[in-house]
Image 1: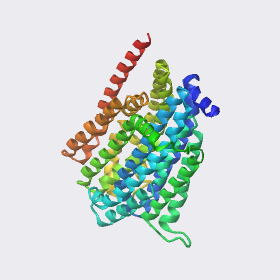
Image 2: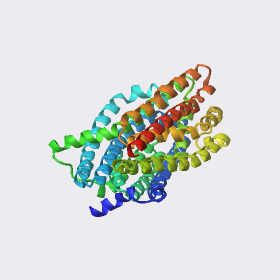
Image 3: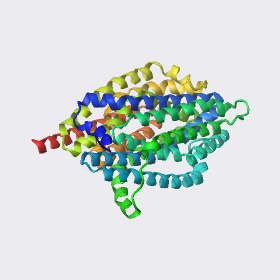
Image 4: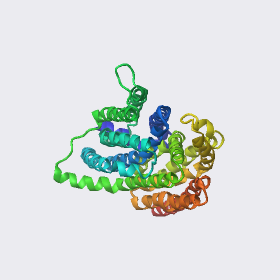
Length: 445
């Protein structure tokens, strides 16, 4: 226990740069492997059939719901545990870890039942061809029922990260992603006695990878839950700190579903292009997403100790690091759209749409540094309302209406909604952040 406390205590004493250098690389490496998995997964599925590739895009929002519920709950556990470590109340921290496991299992069971019952009606909102609908239902049912690994790993990974242990979650995620990558071609196309499963094979590969990651993180991430009457207190605190993260991710799902529905009015290829963008985006957003994961426990720890200046320095360093890498992504989307699309699809229609969409969307990357980091800051300091407000502004109030309005002009104009919404929401977030930091500094003056 003392070792675990000392691993998190350096959040408040070590230099900011050293903290980020210790925490970020393992997280970024794990996310790099995850991004490569997404690319490889889409590559094999795209080679199998165009309808199967569309199916993955259609089911993507359902997978985002899994992430929202699993990781969002885990963030609540992470934030609460980091605060309790800062207050030297380790028993409360470990009780929260045990409670998180119970919550994740319960949510998985409810989600699996609901998702299977609505799968076909949902798929038919975003796909038009019979084969694409069939493939999407098959893939969706398997990954939703088999998502128990994703839910449990979502909690256990955050338990480790709250203690400053980024290495084990990295190993788990890499192992899960590599398992998925190896199984993809075997299960999709068949090998020896293993029959060709098509899109179902891709789904089974995903589930196997998630279960392996859960086993690895669960060995030392599982803690015995407290008694039921005590658990109620921890459930409330976990959702108090995690609800904004859950809602932020769910909003992400809502806006992608809304965009899919709008694009389906043009063609299945337009839906596919959006899905390919998100696959490639995850690769270039790795530094930003990695920093999001790392800074939550660090800011939460320092905020609990009223070290507001350290919180500000953490955010400033995160802005600079994220901006450097986002520029690289912007260059790739501006100048090499056809080369990226060619990895997944030979369809002329997909290439025609994507060669226009990717450069336009790429211009939004710099603004995304602020629109994505600001909600994380407010979430880390326990201000879920402001965090949620910024996410709603970005994904619902800005992106969906502007995307729809531009779609009335034509498909090629819809993509302008991305830079417009990132600029507006990023600007609002930066203003609120500066006001909050100013008020905190006045309190300590």
